[in-house]
Length: 184
Image (cartoon, rainbow, N blue to C red; front, side):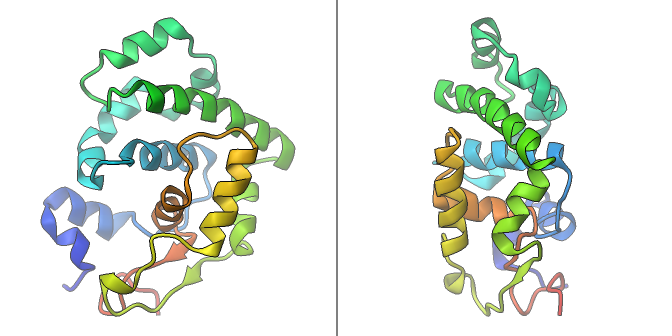
């Protein structure tokens, strides 16, 4: 079975690639989870984040957006001592801040899903890359998402993070042409 080369490094990466990466997601809780995890990855590898994913789910109450938006300084201190997540104050505080911003978007648009998918006209952008080197780090769509999220107060949402988010949640299909997951 041929898959995208980046996934060949570990069983965890293979499983993530084979079952999740690039699959369209329309559930707000799951979208918040990926936005948080992609921001947590900044400066790190995705494998590190995948290894800590269950720790994140426990620490952030399965990404319950309303609960996270109410976290206070005491909760930040607790999270900073949790070895199951990335213990970076800026990233933890960004998660709490982003939960508050996320809720505002949900209120304005009815769901974060309706808001975020508008940037790709509500359908997956299907790319046709032959090699990893062809895949961009960011696009005009990820630039637009990043700019809009920043205007709305979000943190850790640069264009590269937004593009990785788009790939993860299926807004863009960057599976290589040779990959068994490529939607023909």
